[in-house]
Length: 153
Image (cartoon, rainbow, N blue to C red; front, side, top):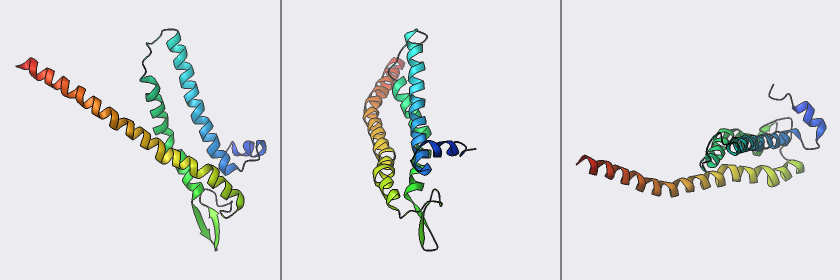
C-alpha cells in the first residue's frame, strides 16, 4: 500500500522513484502546512476564534516533530549503502546502485543538504529558541512564585 503511487509517479517524471518519494514527502509536508494556514486564516477572518501568534509556531513545530523522523530516515537510507557481492547498493532500495554518477549528484545536491538542514540546522534553531525563551519564562515563573508567597504572609 505504501508504494501504490510509485507506479503512477514513475511514468509522470524522469526523477528516479527513490528520490521522488522524498520529494513527495516534502510536498505533503508543505501541503499540510498550507491547509492548516488556509483553514486557520478562514477561522480567524470569520472571527470563530481570536488570533494568537502562538498558533503559527505551535503548528510548525508540531509538523516538524511529527514528520521529521520519517524524512530523516528516508534521507539516511539514501545516503547509506550495502555491500553485496563486492558491489555497493543503496540501503533504501537495493535495486539501485550506490556508485553511479546519478546517485552521487543526488547525494551532493539533494540528500546531504536536506539531511543537514532537517537533521542539524532546524533542531539547533528550535533548541536555540527554547534556550532564549527559557530565560524569560524562568523569570516570569519566579515572579509568580514570589507573588504567591508574598500573598501568603
